[in-house]
Length: 572
Image (cartoon, rainbow, N blue to C red; front, side, top):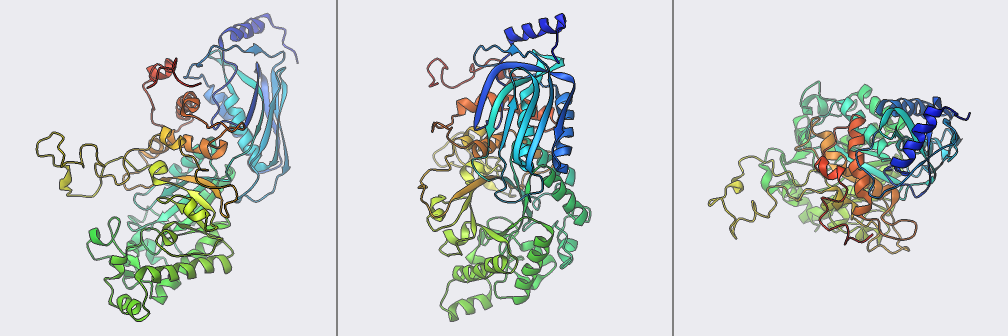
């Protein structure tokens, strides 16, 4: 239906002289052709189509979101631009999905095509799967904003968009052991991930400090290992997380880290753990110490019980077996292990490699799940079956792809979110600065780590400059499947969850979705992302995510005036 109202025409002409033709999209789609027009949303604008319940629910959710946020960009355009009014209002977004019932799992097709015509009328969203439709809905929501700042009027900036992820695995590894997170916080995290088109919640559910995940097969673990009876994830809570994640197109990959990072098990099964009662500093990466006894058959059976129980509840085809930060010194406290390694002429590491091989082969052959491990067993000299996915955190990914392993990149120098927050261990005299001035001897407080092993703080700029293709030839037997940011929560909790993750993790989300290079082979730059992530920060806050400010708002309001390099001299 054409609008002939003089007042509406006048308002559209005003918009044509002041608004920007583009909107700040994040992640940037693979192909966007802007028309230079904006179509007002019709008074009865609807999103229609899709037989999948998650798409139907998302359609309603996004209509509600669009009208609730009535977005007014905070970040002004870097260049003067004009938008012309569309001839007609936008009456609907019609969704077409080829496969409404495909299982959400690794490799599911997330591509979509979004057509918002310059003349208005009906927009279309086409996707091979319901998951792709969810991604397209998020993009459409970012096309809609207030008309020239008038929140009473909404317009959709019209464009033709073809989009698909560069990498199939784009996740957040999240620790719920060091400190507990109530379920509503986890659901909000999933919402934020969906806004950023991230699709894997890697649930690092347990660790040395606490055991919050309830177990039917071994209830003593959470009964004696949780911080408090109220701080556990029982069957109902787990299902809440799984269902919410699925509704957002997010896989949930469970990790019960073994054989290290397991000291808390000793509270329930002291005979299964070596080193829990020993002071941690010489035998563990952090307190408390303690590792599963590799020679104890009952301990191994417990591990199998826990994994079997977990894989029966968590539907994903992957399972993460952990395997990081093994301390040989811890195992050398045990006389039986010393006698065994001496008798068999092997090292404690080689005993660990044998144990890990047995475990991942059982996960693969008996449970029919694809095993995932931290890099350590291979980095430290072992070998695992090639189907094992390696999560890289210290070594170059090509060290593992060259052996035939697919990898998930979580390089701690780029993607660890706990870095740069100072130390957390107690009674640390290194903070004392005798002269209270820099000295050659004090490399801890001046220009040093300040107690954070992976300092400095990793900014969005740092994340965005990572090149996942570096050093990996196209014919490599193993491939980079994607990446994860890692939120270890020794100093994390519900009150800082959002600000530690967002918006900087949006830079990683774009890296994994859009790729480090555009369709013409040009490297994506911080300068290109800057205006979009600055505006995205405020839009996330409008959506209930307490994201951390990236700059003073004066800088956002005055484009490029706070850059290190004069924009007149910067490369375009």
